[in-house]
Length: 133
Image (cartoon, rainbow, N blue to C red; front, top):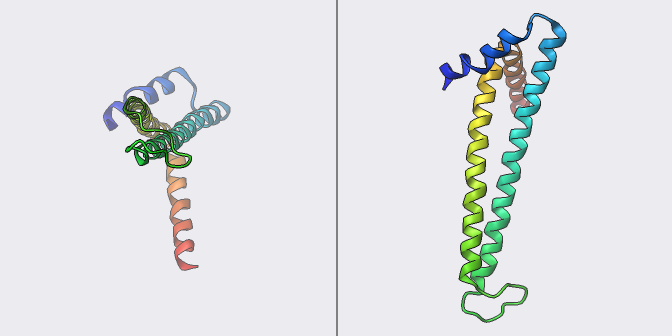
């Protein structure tokens, strides 16, 4: 995927935009990072939604003998299948966004290598001081 990343979006952006212009460079960096952050947010939200679906399914399963456990929905196999399908749908969406995130991060690294090297050095400094505290 690294080769594809370096020969597609990053190449197109550098061809279309004057990346030497500071305003253009920072705008594209900002927008690409915004898209990356939105992907991360979406992944987290899908994870929460899948956890909610799992919890709802567990509530239904608790009452599988048909006796009404207080607050638990009555067991219904069709509802359980719907929840499973819904979980798989969210999981599939999450997988797609995770692939998109990886692709965008590669694009960002190809476009802004100096920014990523700064980020790595800052992260290692934070890690050093976190460990030594």
